[in-house]
Length: 309
Image (cartoon, rainbow, N blue to C red):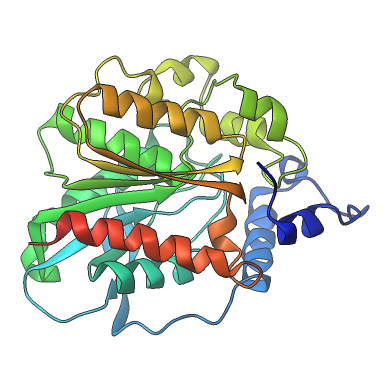
């Protein structure tokens, strides 16, 4: 297994001596920096037939949602998407390109959820935002022109954590009906001690995982809650089919692959996509890696297959 040559080149560059670690930034500054960094490595955004902003119900009040409509229609499939960013960063803007590609490649209406961020909002509040938004979108299916029986959920990194947890919540709480879960390098065990964490926690971009987890959780006890660490759930039977994407040089690789394996053992249909030469977050590096768009499109096609007809 070898690191992609372009990533090897980027990661071998000397560190900026003036760079402030995320854990030492004020949350607002960390978010502005993240938005700028991702804008700098994005590629031109593909067009989508219609994009609009709206409001949906969150766990503590209304929250924003961006809606991507690749096709017109009255009963279209949908993907409710939760962005990544280590629980403390990420926004509708940072994942705008990703959602455009997911919409176009899936032919599903994509709803990008603007949940509350940590540390201002800690577990379970951001998760409850995402769950409440999903419930609200399904309830308002007629208004949004979607089919409530053909709804998928998905997310990357922290958003993958939310998607995996919401699949479990929907089962426990009697809905909504989720057809499919898209888990992109998901953080599914916040207390994991794996080989990939030991190998890739420094020098492969996500260098501040302990800080992210401390920002999201109220205390170490939260980590044992299956809705905080979905891999720790005792029973994964009856969950929606899943597409699980992992990367070879990602500290979250082993927990993502372990979750896919456990889903499979529980009788849940699972498709795995392993990008052995990639790092965590590579889908956001569209301007540097043509493979990012290919991988996003593959994710979208998986969603499209699952929610078609």
